[in-house]
Length: 347
Length: 222
Image 1 (cartoon, each protein chain N blue to C red):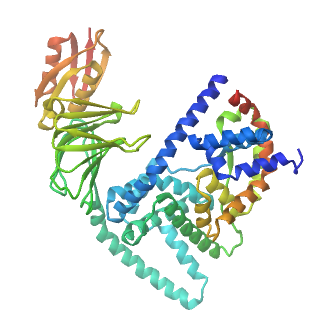
Image 2: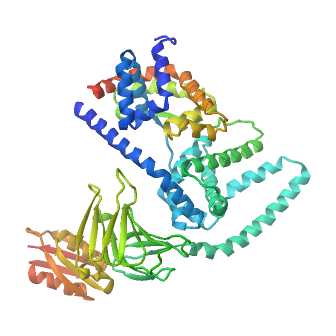
Image 3: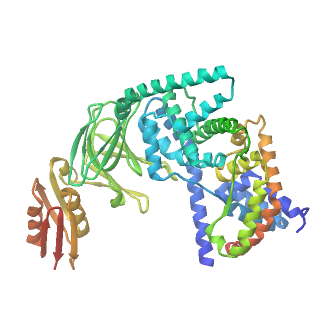
């Protein structure tokens, strides 16, 4: 293979053609049409094209990442405006190479700025903490949160709500993992947006429930009053947006990225915020998960049931033993409760 | 083997279609997200931070192998953005905006460091290493690793601008226009020439590499 081999030049020419490179890495309809035709009219260049194509697909550059802990730690430092020590040093070191006079001025400046920094740090420590607020519930814990605009969020067990201490002028944006019920104060000029991992719900003033647990593999928005718009967090093929009316519920399934609209029983979906544990045709696995989350217990199943369960019932502020006793009334189970550990055996 | 390559083709096709449509939506959503951030929306800031912090970190490590220094630069960079949000300009590409601004900052820090070290060991700025994707590695591992070493030597012999351009072009998928802007070229043609020149300089190595991956290619085309 000589250096002057024209095939090599064709490979280089093709690789430096951005449209070719993009076609190889992201073949879209239009580009595909163009390049298929190009191949037809340049059949002699096919070997070179294949080489160029394979190369573009195989080239992989080494990568370096921060760990998730580093990402969070860094964000914390940024929000509390902690200026990094090293980078500051780099600048001050540069000054040392100047004249002596400047050297003295620089060290004076350094002392001055570090005391200003200390003062500022103390002053902003509180301000920074209120900039973004994160409320987290443990298993078995439910909270009512008053949002800065007067809206109210009820946070179910094992959930997290993140929101700014003061909303911006144009948007009221909160982020949720888990489940929450929102009663939103009406303000048409400032839409209220709930972001979850895969969808966002936009409202003007209304009350609704959002459920998006990682373990669920589905996100559900249930509207009690008013009107909301739901859109995918990452818009895909076509622009998808759903408008819900009161009493309607939209379920987004992560497995196949589909949306399904249905009606719902208000008490079934929102009962939790008033301390009512609701089962509605709930199967065995979901029942166990519900109980663990609601009561903050660990349930060990020694023997799963031979036939699946369909549990129904509303339990208002009942202890776990009551609920298990009710289930025992219908299904043949044995259980022991010791602190936050439950052992369950089904027959 | 045939089955495997069929899947691969389908996957490439699907991911490509997704990216295409996303890119169209990106411009509008970037504009919206960026202006929300500039108006003080903290959730928007966190969104931007989470999306780009690792990309910028990876980018920074190409200029400087000192992890901690890159982290420090990132920290100061985001603090600066957050503090001066009202004075920042509009952008339809947050990624490009951040890359350009971050590059200036990293290069300044490194220059400051070099002055201190009296340039006694002038670090080769912008490091780039090529790896080969896992599925190829098993074809002829030993031979392949030798060639890979030679390719990486060829890349190391490029000028730092050439290496940097290759990174933007293949890895970050930037347009010639954006590459020209980041490298402060007046003409887009300069960016195009730069890429062509870099590829020509490593073409011998590229061709040898492409012969080695040919078995994979045959299965792919069948």
